[in-house]
Structure formats: C-alpha cells, structure tokens
Amino acid sequence: MDAYQLGQKILTTAALVPIDEPRNPGAFSYKKYLENLSVYAQLELNTKNTIPLKAPETSLHHRMVQLRKQILSKIENSTLQNESKGILQALLLAERKAIGEEQIEDYACAGVLHLLVLSGLHIGLLVELLLLLLSPLLWFRHGSIFRLSIILSVLWLFTFFVGLPASVVRAVTLFSFLTVGRFIHQGKNTFHLTVVSFLVLLVAYPPFLKQIGFQFSFLAVFGILWIHPILQRFWNPKIGWIRKYWQWTTVSLAAQMAVGPLSVFYFHQFPSLFLISNLLIIPFLEFFWFWSWLFL
Image (cartoon, rainbow, N blue to C red; front, side, top):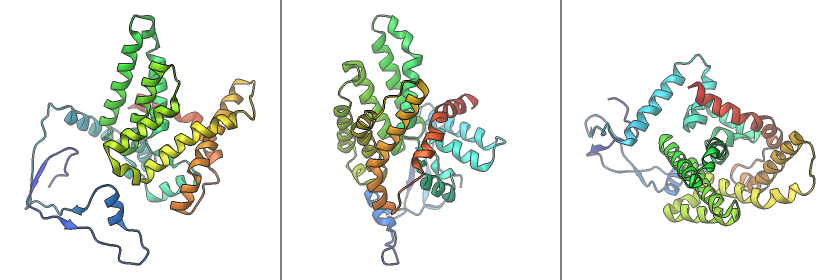
C-alpha cells in the first residue's frame, strides 16, 4: 500500500489500542509524552482495515502538499551529501526527522539545535525581509495596510505550506501580533504583545503549555525582552560591525540565561559552546536560508 499523504482522510475499522507503559523503572514514558500532545491511543492500520479517501485536488491544502513533495524530491535528487540534504529539509520544510540522531545530539551539545528547527529566528528573518521588500508600498495611500496584509498572508501561507509544525505556529502567531503592533503602535508594547500571543496559543490549544518546545520558545523570548536591554547598557560600540556582533552576543546570552535552568532540568546539561557557535553561524544563516530557497 502506498504511503498515506499528509491531510488525507482514511476510513478504518481498526480498534483503538492503548499505548504501552515504559517497561523499565525510570525509563522515558512515550505514553506520557503523547498524553501531553493530547494523544491517548493508537491505531494499527493495514490494507485490510483501511480505505484511503482521495483528497480534493483543487483544495489549497492538496496543492501545498504537492508543492512540498516537489521540493523534497528536488532535494533528494540533488548531488548533495545525505547530511546536507537532511539539514536543507529541516531548514526549509521543517522536516527534522531527516536529520540523524547523532547529528541532533552534536547540535544540541553545541547549543545551536534551534538553528535546525524552523522557529522564531527564521520567521523573524522572513518578516524583516518582507518589511524591507515591501517598504515601497509606504509611498502610496493606505500602503502600510497593504504591506501588513501581505506580510500576514505570507506568514500563514508559509505555515500551512510546511505542515503546521508547532514551532512554526508559535513563531508565526508571535510575529503576527508583533507585526500588527508595529503597524499600530510603531513597535511599542512588545512585551504586552508577546504575552497576548502566549495566551492566545494556550487558549487555542492548552496542551502547548506541557510541551518543552513551547516552554523553551517563550522563555527565550521573555529573556531577550528583559535581559538583552540590560546587557546592552554595559557597552555601546561605535563601529557598526562590532555593534552588530555585540547585539548578537547579548541576544544569545539573554536567551540562554533564560532557558539555561530548564535545559539543565530536562536534559541535565548546559551547552557551554552556545555563544561561540551562535556568533559563528547566525551572521551567515540569513544568507544561507534565503539562498537555499532561490536555489530550489
């Protein structure tokens, strides 16, 4: 039987099967992990108990799925090494499963695992690029409204395109509020808008609060909002490129200071190389990400 497609509806007579408890004392509980995602049982599907329904080919969701398949096929058929293909799939399409476990462990130890997950960093880069490209609209009457509408449309279309992963939904929700806030209040009340996006996500899907990614994301954002301005006061470089690197340094420090205790609690480790890794990679990440899309 062919693999099921994302978004495809399936009729089945299979019975719900309880998820097994961990067999060893103190072992990781996959059952509890799934319960945090509001998943309480599983189905065993095969050709005898399922009838796949064909998705409407005219729907926006179907077209998004087909476009994703074309891009994945293009990456798979490229001459890149398997490791590079996996990184591209993770960065462009939120396909983190394409990356090997050892590779994920290496990035986690270096403190740059967030670079392999489509999240706030990448969505922030996308918003800044859209603001720059659409700035000529400000020359026209009501141009700011058109620019805001286009940015919000692109952000949510991109979210549906990559399959609505939790990290992208969180980031796009946050930057949607921040972009609207920039339009209304000229960039003021950033903290209040962040709190609003936090509450909206929890009201829409309460299990988010139990997800580690959700906790890390908003702790990092709040850390940047609170700690970053304090660190910036210690030094104000006059040279442009030094000022930029100092800004990246304080942002990385602020985020890591906020999520550090949680990292120790969950993973029993603190990435000591996070600052060097981020300063070496982040300056080139924007160029690499957008160049990858142009290449495809």
